[in-house]
Length: 320
Image (cartoon, rainbow, N blue to C red; front, top):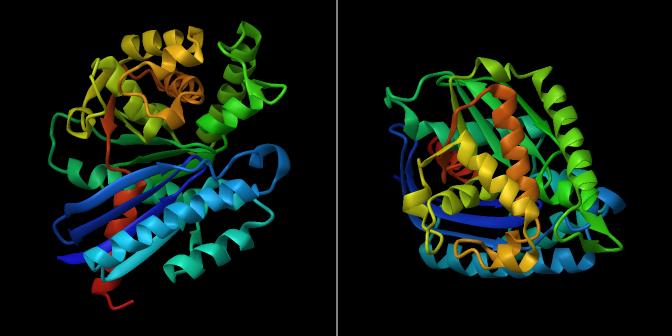
């Protein structure tokens, strides 16, 4: 087993996993797994730059994570940054700040690389589960982008498109600097059209409709699962590998898009950082299920973060 630390810095959140990993068997034992909402992608879709306050929130989380990584004695650290960092003209400020705090250069990966890591993290442990038909379609609904990957034991095709929950909220549900609460029918229609156009783009590369099992990743999907189960609090064990039917996803999405900020915040399993963006994230999930004809989504708590950890352990074993 190799002790590794993996950091996934996305548009909405930054997450840490410290784990003992055996890449040969696919065994991964969590030592510490945590998430902080930093909203790094605040305003990036409009300005093309990372906001100073967003950078500072992210660097504060990195300082906390550096202490945990040191305490647990990780042999190798890999830091991956995704959509917001790709899009920002001042991403060098982000890179320098991370290097100063954690001592490694963040890898600002491509959408294709993000898709492959998500697929690895989500499916490595599904091997041998005969009740889940292949090929899988893994969808990772992030803050700035959504990754689509079709594969069996390995990736056959992948594509990243810009329909994350933060991006859709900022693009369609904000007026005069505030999130419309609840959104208007016209706003929802415009957002839905944007999502459908992105799905058309994804389908140019990825055979979405060939998938037999839909696997959903990241906070929008896991929160929908928590709501579907009426959990009194967010419960990773109850959410991991849960299944949510299309009808239930539709009901939850429609309810979220009708609700006010206060009503969404009162949901017991809702993270405060997702209150404003969960409606858009749920609509992305619903639109995907309709496009591929999925009767249910299999929800995974293991995603790109686990993929980063597996790849870090493989690199350590190879002496890279």
